[in-house]
Image 1 (cartoon, helix red, strand yellow):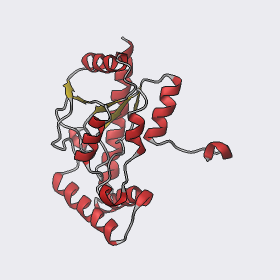
Image 2 (tube, helix red, strand yellow):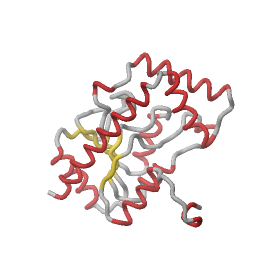
Image 3 (tube, helix red, strand yellow):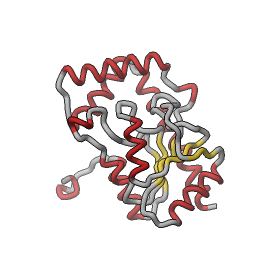
Image 4 (cartoon, one colour):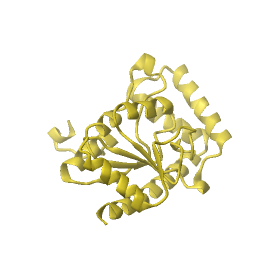
Amino acid sequence: MLLTDRKAGSTTVAATLFIAARVGIAVFATGGIGGVHRDVGESGDVSADLVALSRWPVAVVCAGAKAILDLPKTVELLETLGVPILGLRTDDFPAFYRRSSGIPVDRRHDDFPSLAAAVNEHFALRMGTGVVVANPIPPESEMPREVYERSLATALADASSRNIHGRAVTPFLLERMRELTEGDSVFSNRALLVNNARVAAELALALLA
């Protein structure tokens, strides 16, 4: 609709994947991908990011999926869609504000040459699917576990009690996390974004080597 009206706007991960694939960009960074929502059984809410990753061969550097999502189901659906998860110096899928979710990645890589080789090999197979590069938040910016778990539980309970559904869920939960952590979630978000951008830049260079 924005294109029709010739207006400006920001892009989702799904839209960025589409644009990147159309113009030949092999890798980009985001904070966290969308995924399967915790109430998927009732809402059927699954992010278009996962569908886009199954359609376009682009590597997405992220700190896992957004913490408010059902991470086990998100990882399972990525596997079903043929989208590999490659961990950069990690064995576990990151949990956005936390470095580990306890869910294993498909393969760990400890340097950019081996990571780039795996990404290039996947693209060479012409499966048509993207790659998730899981890059944990820097240790010094990680949210303490007890703060993370308490704030997330409260935010989820608040969303349920206020009957918030659909598109309104994600912005509501992220704002509640900001309030409940007194801004620490914003600090962590900024830190992981900068870290992901750095990794995406290094990976882009390695893909061309």
